[in-house]
Image (cartoon, rainbow, N blue to C red; front, side, top):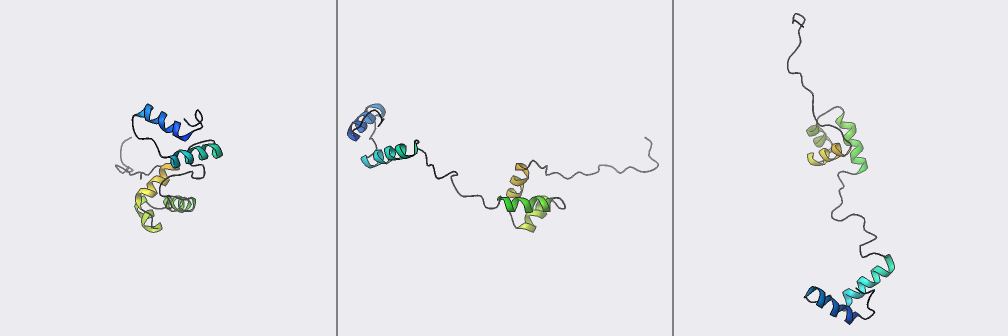
Length: 114
């Protein structure tokens, strides 16, 4: 709205008319205006990710999980590397590895008919 109106008070009046609620403060409107003028967007430019960073699924952890998973199961990998099982599963899923172990249902003997 600020690009239509130069006056902050006019922006507040228009906001009140449009949304039928209390408008943002002058300080908030000025901060939004400054952010838009410097960055060209209202979003935070310097922050690429939101929330807590995932340290257990970093590139080094991923290499260790994939190397260990070749020999052992998912539970053993999580115990060995000290990463929770869901993080091991997330790494395997991201790399498109299947987390299944093939088993033989019935043994084939020499004397069995074909």
